[in-house]
Image (tube, rainbow, N blue to C red; front, side, top):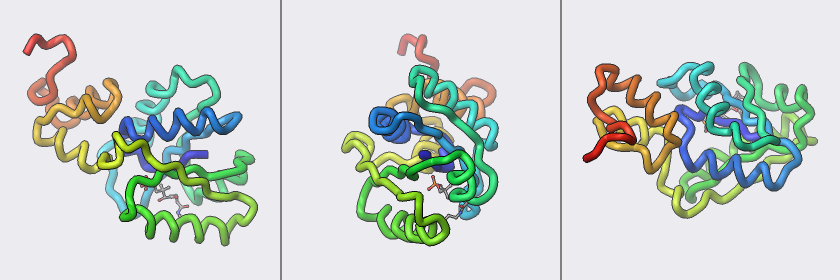
Length: 167
Ligand code: PNS
């Protein structure tokens, strides 16, 4: 199971999903609520975006998760929790979470995948900031996500250019 808030999903997340799908028979992407964050997209919107992004991966399913992560993992019979690690700065938070989850459910281990170096700097919050200010985020997120960001921040059409734009 690969849990996260995915607000919104980035190419870094997609990289971890794709690599997990090669390592495990089945991957459940669990779209969760992080009580420390106020999301831009609803749980349903985030789930829809990920479903669209993972359509081409036959052993990946996307589910919304409300409640305790390990309880959900036990319910679906997950053998491992996958998390991406970008930099040293991620480590403490991830270590805390993995330790807590292990205390709650010792049978489920957390596996960390080092994010591809191309995405090591990438974060959903930075993508939101760039999109909010009208920057082009298509190098960082799937096209469907770039469109949703554009609709959220610039509903009247200003901001992110469409892929068919000449300039
Ligand atoms: O992408 P994020 O925001 O870093 O993901 C964090 C997430 C959603 C995995 C974490 O907040 C979580 O597990 N939320 C579900 C509720 C839960 O079980 N909390 C205790 C975690 S130790």
